[in-house]
Length: 493
Ligand code: SF4
Image (cartoon, rainbow, N blue to C red; front, side, top):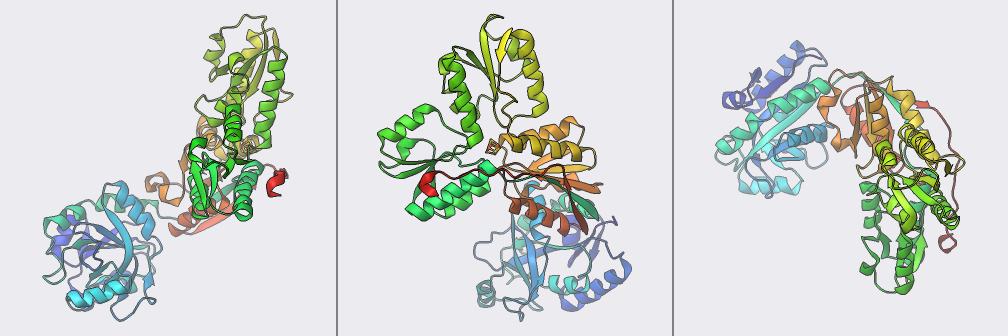
């Protein structure tokens, strides 16, 4: 990728930004001339940043805040005729990760210094900041990867450098993150793992909340995150769902949905006491593990539950037979179990574990106990297994694997671990804003997958962000096809 070119209006701004910088001079004429010269001399894919200070238009903008332009326009363009800069949020996130105070929004260029009333009129059009060059430089350099980064000064009335040190210090901090942006640009292949994203249990849980809202009206209370994804939760919240930690936060007699991960039996008892209209969104595959726990306990067996102790699913399953259930997280835990070799033991597993790691623990249990039974297959669900298989098939073929999902989603975190165990550089991203540009330096093939609780729309947003960083060719690599569907509870059918 060709070197980054930074253009400023003033030499003082160039000194603050540092490195190799082109000084255009102030105003429309200088900007147009310099833009045209650079456009004819730079390679077509050379990244360019227009940088410097500008006058705050928004009353909320503070001196020293960095503005990355989402579009640039002239004072005469009005609200709808700007030149869009689609990479703004990517650049802004990278600047923010460097500790800068960053906002994104339209930047307007004026060929004269504006007074308070004129700036107030620009604020009415949604503009954040005004300068004297950006739009004319951008018009000349429109074919290049382009960003406009301005630091807000107190006022345009006394000229663009009036913010003094408060603008200079942020300008001194922009060069390194902008270099990372330049290094992340380029042509890439994007390979989507399939299956990925929502499983049947998550589809059902989200559907239950949506239908409950339709049938019973807002608010519908939901105990804990319905599924472990912040975007899904925020979306349902916006539609009238109220998320609570415990049932004592739910008014007596209200409608309450129980999350997909299953609950401790005491939660059902509490719900009856509070006369709640309960709709249980526990995934049928988690409910099956609860059923197995009760059955083995009735047979007088000790239960060994393989899982992560802090996970809600494990807390719920252990509640079925708390006096005779032992939690095992590692192979070493198997040796430490306070049980004799010939005790009757049954094992169960959390549904969202890594298949390869769990197999080792089950082998250790088989070696340790002579009377060990377990489910016909392990309890790791079809969706977890399929997504891990898809990642395994992709891990060796990409330079970077992006796993879309929330960090508290067990199956999502396992996908990252499965890929890393195969030597693949894998990173978890909640959405496109978490994409760190340093990961993309030198990367030509990016794999993308998503945990079972992350919607496909988030995958598409990440792919769109990759497309903004350069031309991409997208294809899908499918390792299995899923046809599983779960029926809804009677109350919302
Ligand atoms: S990951 Fe598996 S167990 Fe969990 S909700 Fe989805 S289908 Fe059910």
